[in-house]
Amino acid sequence: MNQKPWVDKYRPKSFEDIKGQGQALQKIKKYLEDFNIGKLTKRKKKAIILHGPPGTGKTTVAEVIAKESDSEIFELNASDFRNKTKLKEILRPAIEQQSLTKKNKLILIDEADGISSIDRGGLSELIRIIQETTYPIVITANDVWNKKLSPLRKKCEIVQLKEIDYNVIKSILFGILRNEGMFIDNKIITKIAIKAKGDIRAAINDLQAISKLDGENLDPETIGFDERNKETDIFSAMKHVFKGKPTDKTRKIFDSVNMPIDKIILWIEENIPAEYSGKALAKAYDRLSKVDVFKGRIYKQQYWRFLVYEYALLSYGISASKEKTKTGFTSYKKPSRILKIWINNRRTAKKKSIAKKYAELVHVGHKRAMREFPIIKNIIKSDEDIQDELQLDEDELAYLEK
Image (cartoon, rainbow, N blue to C red; front, side, top):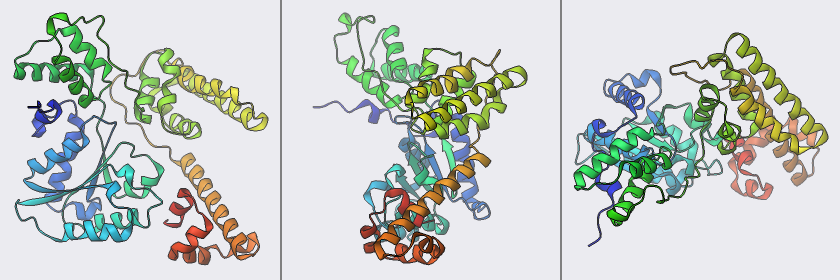
């Protein structure tokens, strides 16, 4: 008989079982408390988004929320519904009907990254359902800052599940071994915890795989694991740059951030004053200005090798600007004014590209299409055949929904 996977066997069943996510759990408990006493109607945020890298326990936390609140869980994967009609058929009845088996009900929408902005009204319908629901809605996402989820973020409390420190992972692994009546060398457990890079699920799977080997022949020095090639979220990357020592890893930190370099520059610019002051602040801004110089040279000369200098100054250069590290937790902010300008420019670009395609299709001038764009937008938005004929891309379709 096959042994039950340890990730399922030792899945947390209560808030107390969840380790290393204290700050996130405080926010979740406050959200549930406010929902139960009706405060959320004033705050207009009836859903929460749990976001973080794979393996940090987003779905597990949602299941624990259901258990702790004695709720029936109604679960959907975002990739299961691709349009407004399908979403109405599946999700709307769930928010209108009471639970038959439990005191309460909780709606879980897993992997919201699967909701594409090209979906035919799926995202806008989800937002309408959030506004109308009388039950808590929990949404999970790996990358909540993806631009296609921007309308959803405005309607939800955002709760980050961070990568777990390897020492916390070690304590979890040792707890599993005690329950299994097994022993594995501390050096091997440390190696598993470090290589997991904050992914508890991966660490437990590695532990179970190692447990099946001959314990007497396990050599901590030769046993190997595949490195996890994980994306880094922008918050973790900034923390590494601002609070860590400049190393070779620092130079490469933004390589694993799934975000254009122009946008990374805006994040860094917004948050430098939160970490640096005095000479360090001046030095950091000086290096950031040199990033902008190289960016200009790339655009003018199309000499893309300068991109290496952009990344080096943005990461290692700014990290090395500080004389000492500011201790304690720092709450990083999304870029404000500059990001709004950048977003507005992007939106204008989409407006122009849609107007150009429409002008070519119906044989009118581009300037006329721009003047009459509010009418044209409604025509295109209401007719999927026209959208297909114009061959609008994902960003253009998302622009029509705004």
